[in-house]
Amino acid sequence: MEWMDTNQDAQRLLDRKLARDVASDSGLILLREGMAVTADHLKMLIKHGVEKVAVSGHASFLDQLDAKCKAQHAAFVAAYRDQYNQLQALFKTAGRPGEEELANVLNSFETLAAEALESYSLFEVLQQLEGHDGYLLRHSIHVGIQSAFIAKFAGKSRDEILTFGKAGLLHDIGMLQMPKALFEQSRTLSEEEWNELKSHPAKGEQHLAETDVGGAVFEAVRDHHERMDGSGYPKGKTADEISEAGKITAVADVFDAVSSDRVYRKKASPIAALQEISREVFAGRLSAEHGMRFIDCMSSMYNGTDVLLSDGRLAKIVRLKATDLSNPLISINREVVDLKQLDGVWIADIADPRLLTHQGS
Image (cartoon, rainbow, N blue to C red; front, side, top):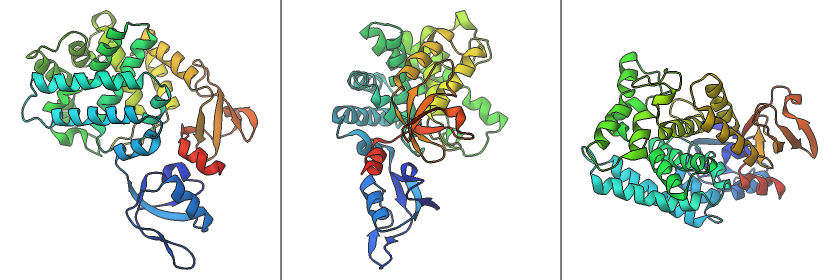
């Protein structure tokens, strides 16, 4: 259980489940234990002078997705749910999934990608999902969407964009052969466990070799943990030996892993995820071609975006340079400043649009 402030912690409170009933000073029950907090609830709590509430856990991430964007992007939410259900069926398959299960998953992605690629704002919503339930499945979906974006940024054809997206979608299929405990641990893995987990690209490659799924999908499964300097796994390939699908998926994989909640670690902001990609590129581990293009396009997209600062204040990004990700020009309280002028303050997250409505009312 955690106590949170209805003003300072407003964004973090959205979609959290109440651990206790909430009552007004007069004893009137305002909200019941177990309810997920909405923007309207926040307005009511502040109106009644309730400063703190006890929370525990989050609404399911699919319910969060509904709450965040279904009104504006109903088709996307429906396609996302269908993709999630198809992947869930695939990952629940006893033994190794066959051609039909794989075909269903890949066909569903075509509808999802068509919706996702229409609006860059959906990219921001995916990074706002809280909690780690369903992480492996939603990570697969997000890496698929992000890989499609990277291919689009690279000027690929529509068919190529879909192919690279499908590659990202199935990049972790080797996890089917892993004990669940390995990727659901909140503790540091032992060396033996880590070595077993690192075998998932090879196991995925072995599985797809027995199917008709090949090309970029096969290459991404095999290569997404290889690194340009040879420091990756499972084969320690270097730059020219790594497929383009592997290079693209690696960038998308890092971005989503950093900006998503994990069982052992809270998510960082998408800006921090871009900084991590930049560090990996300059360390010679990720593809400079795809990594820097992704950073350039994403940093440009975030110009004009409302963000939540680490001290709880809202701001707007005025200018975010790919070459200076840690120091964007922001507007806060109608004053434009360099973020570095706010000592010890950083961008914690993209602002939830429901929070903007709540605070603007």
